[in-house]
Image (cartoon, rainbow, N blue to C red):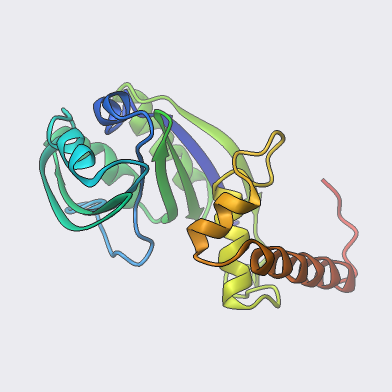
Length: 220
């Protein structure tokens, strides 16, 4: 059965461990619209939390990176084109080269977190075993099986509501304790605190309404 899994790996054993150590505030994200495969995995990184020059220097000095080119810069990071070492390309290929789809990938605070859509759990097992054999320990933070319709529907949410919920989930907004607050989340989404509060409230209401209206009473 198709599942969405949340995985975490230590950056020191995986990629950009040196960069995160050199610039502790650095956070990087793989843009979700970027197509990538086993021959060119994670070619672009969106960096935040660091001066563009500091981020560029951290990437260039990292042992997992062969080349790093800054494509654009802002006050807080920028977009980079990265060429990984052969070893890292092999490791990343085990993630993006399977039948699984990487929904999101983010590195911060010395760790990488991935959300992966997998057609079955055997597919995840292959990735786990490969990374473990190469010295990368991966923790399974959570896994959720999807109904046949879940993978293609938006649960009645607007695109903006869906993005707000997904970003909040990735940033730990729903964790206890929270990994971020509404002010930080609103700034990342480029909207006001009030607009985010209203968007989340409507989204939560829509999710609850659809869940209860489905008539399903299967509890975890």
